[in-house]
Each structure stands twice: as structure tokens, then as C-alpha cells.
Amino acid sequence: MTDEDQLAAEFEIQRSYLHAMAFRLLGSHADADDAVQEAWLRLARTGGDGIEELRGWLTTVTVRICLDGLRRRGVRGEQPLLELEIGMLPREEVWGSRIDPEGEVLLAESVGLALHVVMDVLSPAERVAFVLHDVFEVPFDAIASMLGRSTAAAKMLASRARGRLRLGAPAADTAGRKVVEAFFEAAGRGDVAGLVSVLAPDVELRAQGAAGLGTVRGAGKVAAQAAMYRNPDARQHLVLVDGLPGVLITVGGRPVTVMAFTVADGVVTAIRMLTDPGLLGQVVPAWVTSS
Image (cartoon, rainbow, N blue to C red; front, side):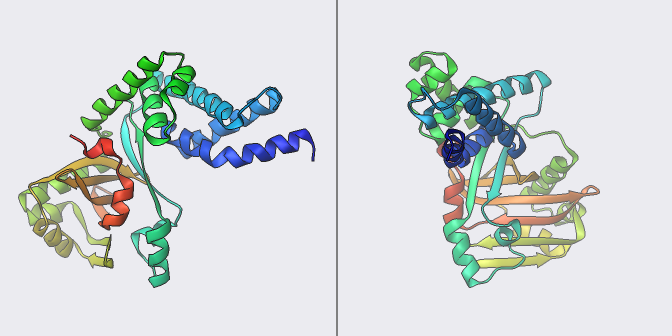
């Protein structure tokens, strides 16, 4: 094996870690792939000689690539959002068009639900400090070195990020989001007619709970269920779920439901709902529900 082959093999060991970090910083798998590929190209040009700790070197390089991307994004004025990604299993297994007992075990043990902060309310430096420390447990002195700041400044950036995130993320102004907001306004009033008006006649609701999967079809039935289960103590966090408009619902600081909405022609055509406490406990980091 040549030195270049050996270096490539060592890089591949770190690829999934680097991609996970880049995705949490950039919020896009495509952008994360680009960042990781650029990190490899820089490593290939530099060579492994003189690199004492490859993982740390690659982390620094990848973070700086992501920082550049975030700064360019800020100039373009992209919209802030909070995104939930369903990972590791096909979406139909998570949301439940088909699943068997063996599949339920696999879901409970292996599904990766990760909450990614992709909010332009944070500066690039704040986002890096928060994600690296709170998600990847990178020490503040290492973060400070990557950012060219003092350790105290890195700690302050992460703290400021947590404070801003607790205020919630504004939603992108899209037609789908407005339909979802209308759905929850009607549900909060217990307004079945209002709910029906934003639901397609053949809308389908699929729910994954601790007891298994359930399906409700038809605007009337879905509206009646939504109105029946309204809770004045619930708090709604606007999110994207696999790119779809959605809501994370908490009660008393505890996550109870994630919902994803498919919207077409101004009405909801499908709703996917996750209520399994075990899975929800893996989804939500402390900054969402802490007071």
C-alpha cells in the first residue's frame, strides 16, 4: 500500500464523523459532502507528514471550510430554520407504511433522529462554538484555536448561542408553513370546520407511538382527532422534518410529538407523527426545552 493509499484509508475512517459535524454546521448533506471532500483535497495536498493527530487536524480544517461557507451564506441572506432529519432507516419504516415486529425492534434500537441547528440567527462563530462543544464535546480551548479567539471568548460564543436558540427559530415564510400554522390555530380553538378547510379530503395521518403504528384517513376523522387532543399547555417549535414543514411539540419542557406535513395546492395531504417517548428522548437536546 502506498503512502497516499494509507492516508486515504485513514481519512475514510474519519469521514462519517466529519460529515456529521459539517452537516450540523451547514444543514445540508450536499454542502457537508462538499466540505468533507475539500478537507480530503487539502489533506492530499499537504500529506500526512507532520500531522501529529489526524482527527484533530481534519476537524480544524473542516470547521474552517464550514465557517467560510456560513459566512458566504450570511452575505446571501438565506432564511433561518430548525431542521429535524430522520436518518439510518428509510422514511417509510420510520413513519410507518410498512413495518413488522422485527422492524419495530430495529426502529427502537437503531433509528437516528438528530436535531440540527441550522439557524442564521446565530453568527458563524456562535454556531461553530455551540455545535462543536454541545454536540461533539470538543474542548473550548480547541474551539478557540479554530476560531482564532480566546478560550473565554469561545465559551461566551457558545453561551450566547444557547440563549438565542432558547428564544426559538422563526420559520421560513412559505405557503406550506402558513398552511401548517392555520392547522394549529384551528386545532388550538377546537375548530373542526377550520381544520377540515386546510385538509385534503383524502388526507392520511400516520402515527408512530410506543404501542406501534396507527393510521387515520379522511379530513373529517383527522380534524376530529386533532381537535380532541388539543392541549393548552403545549408549546410548538416550528421545524423542518426531512425538508417538510413540521412542528416539535413540548409540554412542561418535555418533547411529546414531532409532526411532519405534506402540503399541496394549499391543503395538507399527509401528516406523519412521532410520539414514541423513547425516540423523542433522543431527538431533542437540552437547549430546546431548558428554561
